[in-house]
Amino acid sequence: MYASSLTTGLVALLLSSAPFTLAAQPGLVPFSCGTKTAAGDTLNVIKALHKQELGESIAGLPVALKNGVGGAQGRRAGSGRKNKDSKEKRQQRLTVDLYMHVVTTVVAQGEVSQQMIDDQVRALQNAYNPYSITFNYISTDVTVNDLWANDGDDLGMKASLRQGSYAALNIYYQTNLGDRNLGRCTLPGPEPFPRSANFFTDGCNVLSGTMPGGRVGGYNLGYTAVHEAGHWFGLLHTFEGQTCFGDGDFVADTPQQAQVTNGCPALGDQDSCPDEGGVDPVNNFMDYSYDFCYTEFTFGQDLRMVDLFTQFRSGS
Image (cartoon, one colour):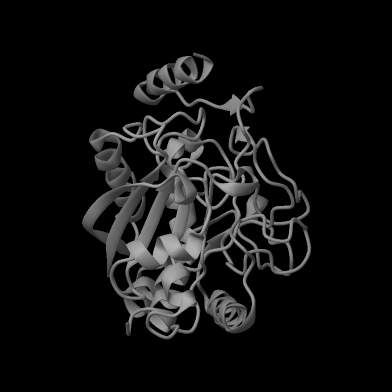
């Protein structure tokens, strides 16, 4: 009842022209993501791309800094301003095959409707189309299996259901996920051997209740899948490391962020690193905000997704 009332209220707010915010609401499960941090070859490539990105910034890639002053040696920016020449030089448009799998318990069978599936595809397309990624939606299959739906035998599930190459995104919408996570996803890395465990397990696990119209209040507009897909393309959390020091998420135009966002504070109200450039990017898909708070990736994140897909997945 409460989640339904909240969803109705959010829809009304979304349809209005006035800006809105919402503090974390009691009774709503906070966003939690089970994606592992980058390591090995993936982390090394991310660091190399970050170093290259910083060099371009020094060479003249324009960035907008809070109060005109750059923190962390001018590295972090409030919101990267697009550079047309850089975009034309470095970016290409990606078309990525998308396969979706609904895995449900017997009791929850029918909880995910065709309308929810259609709306989820639309949410993914609408989030990524303004950038450099288009999804070529192939299909959705529905499997009734209590073990798989409750996050058991992940390898067995994916070995049975996975479709396409290493360049194809597979998302598994399950009734329940372990550790109270709303989702988790694999990061890109060196292409695994065909039909190996690493090949089969590549993809994203998402709680089906986060699909548009689902049962998870605050997180049921379909943006958990958008967030997790960001990991699949190689993005880290904007609050990576949860510190005001270091390289954070290794993207030059996302502000340094030392705490996760819960709810939807007004942009500018949350600044966990006040001595650094920019305020916390509460509207960024790679934070932990409520779904209706999400609006964007940055230009640097867009470049990073294209670069890492090209590095690790495009030859598949």
